[in-house]
Amino acid sequence: MGCADCHIQLRFSTTGGLYGRVIISAWYADRANRVDLIADESRDQWILRQVANGTRVAAGKTRRPIAPDQAYAVQLDDDGSNLVLTVDGEVILTVPSGFAPSSGTIRIKLRYTSAAFEQIEVS
Image (cartoon, rainbow, N blue to C red; front, side, top):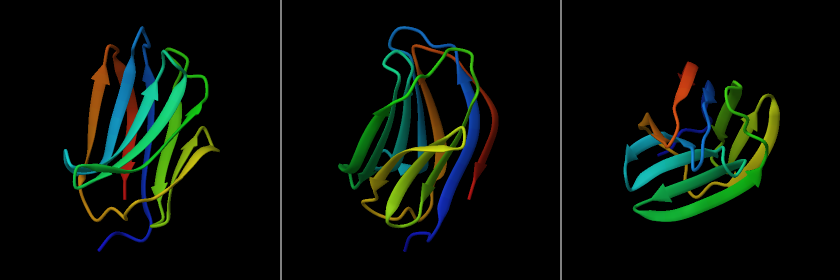
């Protein structure tokens, strides 16, 4: 059974760079069950992917500038129906949710960049 209103809030900045990505796996149970938020600075794209039992069940992306060394306040919500990505107080992406997360941790990966995190809140 999933949570009815799950959310993650964080504030981060990236140094950017060619192919630079910050990947935040929310409600990470294992490689086959997770929600990925990808901030792709080199393409100015924010990407959401939801994976269940190893299969991508939901995905979406949007273009919005990601500037090096600028802090972004990011919130990711799953209300059981939609994944909603908010950046700096503005909803920039809504994707129908493939399943409601039940538990898990947060996992952070960096590709070809470095990043600074000021706060991370999970509920």
